[in-house]
Length: 343
Image 1 (tube, rainbow, N blue to C red):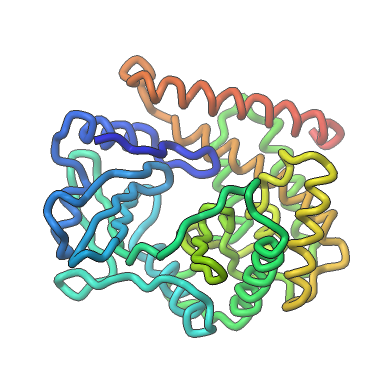
Image 2 (tube, helix red, strand yellow; image 1 turned 45 degrees about the horizontal axis):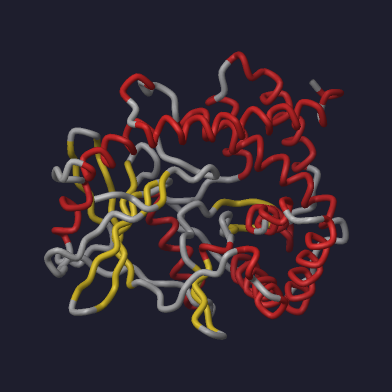
């Protein structure tokens, strides 16, 4: 069995864990997926590995219904962190947003846990949303307007969310602190840039423009079914100024021509402002959060390869690392050139 999508750059689990589990599947040995699916009912022979990045994703069928098994190492997300995610999702559903509900296991639990030689893992199951995601470049004006509206609805709902007192999602400050801790001494420039960005973000008024955001509101986390949609993958939700959600969600706009970028931002912001006000300086904030995103991505990706043994890598992982480190080098050079005065 082979995963069709491996190691996305924006967020990736420890590579050592990822490749060992994928290697198992390549050799048709028992994997964490075949172990964890036993907590739920399923049709034999339908479980297939599909994606390995922040999570292991396994589509399968039960009584003809398409479902998704999502598995994450405890080293990436604890049970409390997953429960905090599910709390937020439950709140969003109650506020009328199209968010999937986790399916209970045979034991009546939302989350099941299990161990193998690669450590402790946690699993959640969802129905597979009908429809499909639309590639970034294929989204039209109508869909960009609706993307803006749906994010604004999510942010309005976020303002009403009261987290469980014993479990909270991380904050933007946590991301900066953890990123600095993950960086090596060789990356002193990125550390200084992160500390500078922390001071700048800290000055942004919070109030109605701050709360728990999706964080990964990108094109492949919206499933379209004609004019309806479902929002998926809130596992990276965190407390940030709301403009960060726009920056991280439509990050690919930076790869478009200036004219196309302006067109998409106009469509998106027009839809957003139909539902909720944007800060007057949201465009300036957008560039700020692009830089924060790139700095955090740099640290996350570097850490994902920490402690791995390249000599054991299969060919696909060697190529993946080369692509990641090439991108990281370019981002580091860009950030250092832009923030040369603060470092």
